[in-house]
Length: 187
Image (cartoon, rainbow, N blue to C red; front, side, top):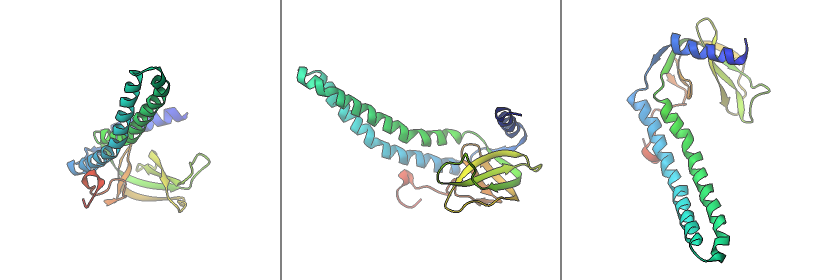
């Protein structure tokens, strides 16, 4: 069976056979607060882009000499817009994913060391296995210590996008218990 077929089988099994629950209001609020915090950071490139756009338009309306410099400000406008979009895509994607279910599996957690496909900074992989030890989903892990090859029985809550949220009722830190509004202060 090729990789695409295995992936589709796992996705179909996950969507049809696994127990799932919706995100709680508190969990969604944590992700939303992260989104709002990132929006606060993205305001800067939006404002800078607007200033450079104003300079670009103003120079295009002036005489011939100003039009020679205008493309520089046009490129700066484009760069700031791209920067703002790059800042906002991950938190928007994360918030949209809060409308997908959180899956619950009474199965196994498998840890394994990095392989030749691992990126720099990854210390291995963590997977959710069902009660028959079939892989449901796997994510790369980041950290300093290399993950050992190990499998242990556990009750796991995970989302496809976010990874493992809880193992045996304990938070993995993927989704903090609370997140301060705008990411500033005490939650």
